[in-house]
Length: 101
Length: 348
Image (cartoon, rainbow over all chains, first blue to last red; front, top):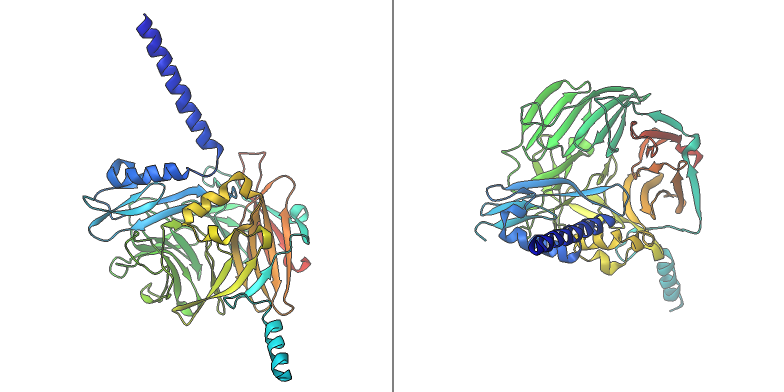
C-alpha cells in the first residue's frame, strides 16, 4: 500500500514538474533558452531523432515558421541544403551534420 | 592654411549625415511621431469561406488594381478588389501541378509563378489558378540553391540562397537570368545561418534593395555582383546595441524577444520601397507598427505610428499607385479574415 502511495506521489510530482516546464516555456516568446538550444544542438549531433525534419539520408530540410520576432507576428523559419557526406537536420536550428559524425 | 581649414569644415559638415559606411542616415525622432489612424481608411474585408481561411497576411500584392494576391503560410489566395474571394493558386503535394514547399512567388503578365526550393521547380499558373507548366531547376541549381526568388529589372531575378551548413561558405544573394540560371553572386556576403524570413527585397526598374533581420541598414545592389549599404536607420537610444547585432542571429533574436527588451528596442525594418522622391519602410517597436517616409530631396524624415481602434496592425505594408495598403487583424472575431485598410499616401 505504502509503495502505491509513494508511486502515486512520485507520478504527481513528475506531472507538476513537467507542467511547470511547459507553462514556463509558453510564457516566453523566445522559444528556448541558450541552455536548451545548446541541448538540442548537442542532441542533434548525436541523435537523428532530434531532427524535427530531415535526418540521416536527407540532404535538405526546412521549417516554415519557428520563431516569432519581438511579438510582431512575423516569424522566422529555417532551411538548409547539405553537400554529400552530410545530412540535413532541422530542429530549432537548421544544420548539416557529417554522416557517422 | 585658411582655405584648408574652410575646406575641412566643408567636408565635415557635408558628411555629418553619413555613417562610416557612407550610407544616408535616416534618423527616427521618437519625440516627434504622429498617429496614422486607419479608422477612416477604406476597408476591404477579405471574404471568409471554407476555401479562404487566412491565418495572417504574409505577403500582399495588389495586381492591376483589380486583384489582391495574398500569401498566408503555404497558401496563395486571390481576392477581388472589393475583397470577394476568387480562387486559390496551386496547392501543396507531390504531383506535377503541386508544390512540396512554397518558398516565394511573383506575378508577371497575369501569370503567377510559385517557386519550390525543395523540389527545385518553378510552377506557373493563370491568375484563376489554372496550371500552365512546371520548370525543373534541378540541373541548374546544384551547389548554390535559391531559397527565395524575386524579379528585378531587365528580366533578371535576385535570390536569397539556402544555407549549406556551418562548413559551407555560400553567397547570401545571387542574380539569375530570365531562365533562373545564375549570372553572378553578390560578393562578400555569405550565409551564416539557415534562418529564413519573407519580405527581404524591393526592386523596380531603377532600384534594387535588400534588408535583413535585426539589421538597421538597407542595402542596394549595383553592377550585378556588388552590394552597398545605402540607408542607415538610426533608432538612436532605441537601436539594438551593436554588440548584440554582432551575435549569432539566434542569440540576437533571443535578446530582442525578451519582454523587457521588446519595450526598449525598435527593429524589424520591413516593406521598404524607394522611388525618385521617397524612401519608405515600416518598423516595429513596443507592439506597434511605425511607418517612415524619407523625403530624399529635402533630407526630411517623418514617422507615423499606425493604429486602428484596438485591432492589431500587421507589420506589412504595400504601396500601389499612391495608396498605402495595410493588413489588420480583427481580434474579436475568429471567424473572419484579416481586413485591408487603404489610404491615400498624399495625406502624409
